[in-house]
Structure formats: structure tokens, C-alpha cells
Image (tube, rainbow, N blue to C red; front, top):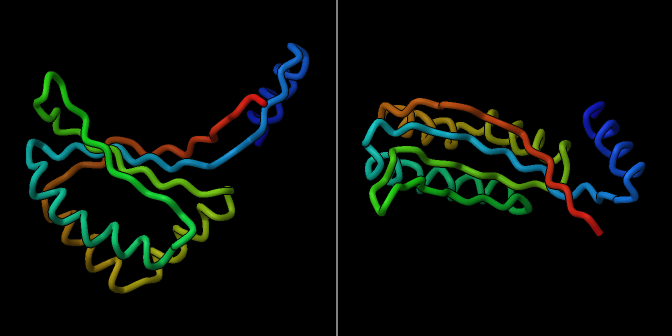
Length: 124
């Protein structure tokens, strides 16, 4: 929150008024060249996420270089506030079916490289 206030203050001094929009949770995953198996396991997990949190938007992006997969996957969950991100986390942590599906994803041998909560800024 301090960073948002600092950034907003700087932008206001410059005459730019930001509007804080969505909160975006981005998880970067290394599939260790096991991308097809990872995506196959991830599909039902993402469907369960959508059932548990119909207001959150999610997408999966595959990184590639000249057409070939780099083995990195970006799992993106977009919510309208930090509180909504917390609600998504609570719902998935407390759902037995989601946890079962998550264990299938983990069994593909993937490594979580990073997990970042990003705040989208729009300039009106």
C-alpha cells in the first residue's frame, strides 16, 4: 500500500492521475519441458477455480521462442481488489477438490518460479 501511495503522489506531482484497476496474481511455472502433461493436469484445476470464484478472471499463457515452448507457463488470476484476491486464496485453500487437483498438477514435476501480486494502473 505504501508503494501505491508513493507512486500516486509522484504521478500527481507530474499531473497524471492514475486509477488503480485490477489486482493480478501471476504465477510463473517451469514445466521442465513437460508442458503437455502440465497443461492437461492444469485444465480441470482452472475449471474448479472458475467454479469457486466466478468473479475472478483467469488465463494461462505459454512462453515460447520462435514457436517452440520455453517450458514456462504463466497462470494469471485477475480480481478487482486485494480483498478479492484473498477470497480466491481462501476458497482454494479450503476446497478439498481443488487441493486434490492441485496435487495432480504438482505431480507433473513442475516448479513454481515466482508468484507476484501486480496492481494494474490505468491513466485516465
